[in-house]
Picture 1 (cartoon, rainbow, N blue to C red):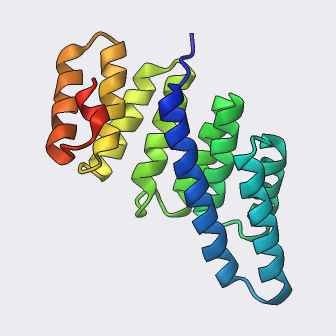
Picture 2 (cartoon, one colour; picture 1 turned 90 degrees about the vertical axis):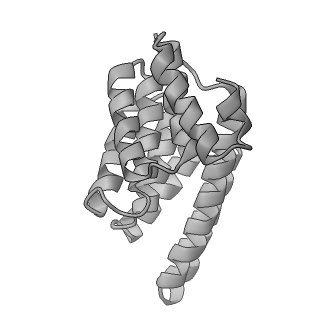
Length: 185
């Protein structure tokens, strides 16, 4: 049976999504020209606002319009993936994340983050094995990201693999001793 994210984790995740979407809209609008710049900014701001308000259908529609305007923008595919994930459309979210990864060949600066989001989606869909594989890829790409070790540690713990869980939590505390979630596993 699929597991849902904790309320605390979901709240933090929503905050991070909102911040990244807002930054993305501002940065992408700078690249556009003339009227399209204003349109992009307007559509982007509304999509982010809709996302923040829980209007997922409207947010999705806005992000899709932006994808039509800038189809090679990885952030847009991440945004639609996150909307799909929140809707519980896990397979569709995975497709969006895979497209995001394909834009930069799977090795861009944010690829580790996309693999971590993919892992969370797979976990929510009840596929712990593939979720572990996605966390492994994310950690290989950015081994210094404590939050990914914590997330994988939580999944190991849910799978009753306490040795691997402890190893991930230990590594997370080494990387970020003040991260409270690293100590709560």
